[in-house]
Length: 110
Ligand SMILES: N=c1c2ncn([C@@H]3O[C@H](COP(=O)(O)OP(=O)(O)OP(=O)(O)O)[C@@H](O)[C@H]3O)c2ncn1[C@@H]1O[C@H](COP(=O)(O)O)[C@@H](O)[C@H]1O
Image (tube, rainbow, N blue to C red; front, side, top):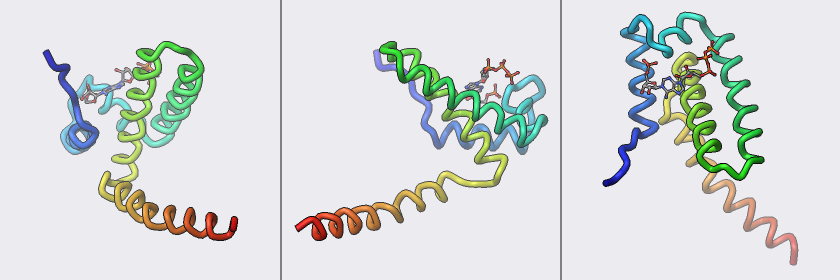
């Protein structure tokens, strides 16, 4: 049996739906109702939990914390009106830049 998965894009879209069509009692709705400062506080807490879990050999606990942080960062992106496309475009723009930088630094070494 293969484990079911939720893609980052699916989760982002679901979070966006919660913002436009709030479901009372939903945790995501609770975060949007509380606003940016609450979301930032959660991102801070979850980041710390990832750091702590990364120092522990328990992979399951680390995965859980990374998933929590991912969810809260996606909520933050939706709150700020930033799309996954914009992040992907930023990452893509680095691809060329990074390999050019690497090439340059290896040229400078010799
Ligand atoms: N992926 C998540 C997800 N990850 C973490 N969390 C919630 O994040 C909270 C983090 O736990 P904490 O103990 O740190 O926080 P807390 O004490 O519950 O709350 P605070 O008072 O600290 O805000 C928990 O309540 C989790 O349920 C999530 N809540 C929702 N989702 C997904 O978001 C989508 C929309 O779900 P709803 O929010 O239920 O509409 C669905 O796909 C859900 O699976």
